[in-house]
Amino acid sequence: MTDDDFPRRSPTIDTTRPFQARLWNHWLGGKDTYPVDREVGDRIAAVYPEIVEVARHSRAFLVRVVHYMTGLGISQFLDIGTGLPAVDNTHEVAQRDIPGARVVYVDNDPLVVTHARALLTGAPDGTCDYLEADVRDPEAIIRRAGAVLDLTRPVGLLLLGIIGNVADADAPHGLVRELTGALAPGSHVAINDGTNVLGVNEWTPAEATARGEALRLCAEAGAVPYHARTPAFIESLFDGLELVDPGVVSTPLWRPDFPELGKPRQIDSFGGVARKP
Image (tube, rainbow, N blue to C red; front, side, top):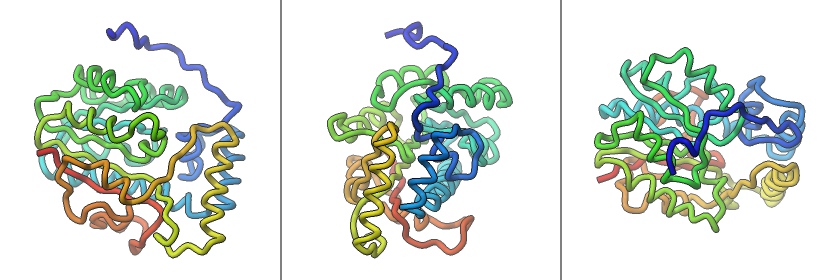
């Protein structure tokens, strides 16, 4: 493949079915949605109200892990599955700490492409870029990201809420290994995703049924299926890397140095950060 295989084209936006980036934007209170996204998002939130809290805590987790990585001197970030622009995007957080930080965003949603182009026009030249690509094509992501990032130096890789979109048949562990394998020693990887274990939040059987109904509604509406997995599965994605304290925990409990959303408590989302030795 060459870069000619990835032309910059005007995106065709499908407004007949919901997209994950637009659903999350709706749950975060954003306006970059279409009626189908709001309708499906509201139906999901009606049966599984915690999804709104999961979305908010996932964004807060991003802020904390980027601060953690810049504190280690990491000034390059590869954010895969970035979603629609919101408050405290990766480049904004990183460049507050390190003004010259470089960020490459990756997403495959056409609406995200449109918004990313507008976002990047306000970014300092050469410090921010956007790739239209799929997490299931790590070779293309790494090759193209290497035009902006110096892959011989440590990189902060963010895989936040994206591995849940990868089916078992697409080998999520292999995708993570291929992505991290291309990074320099000292790079750090952050992963978080929703979980599906009865009892993680002391669910009642009715709450467990509601969680399954939310996933069913999402799939029925035509959105990309989301595969909620166990905390142990999420931890296994870090195999071969050195987990930093406190390991893989419920997202709000990972280094809650900035209590943005009140007293941290366990929710239906787990994540962690690890170092490549």
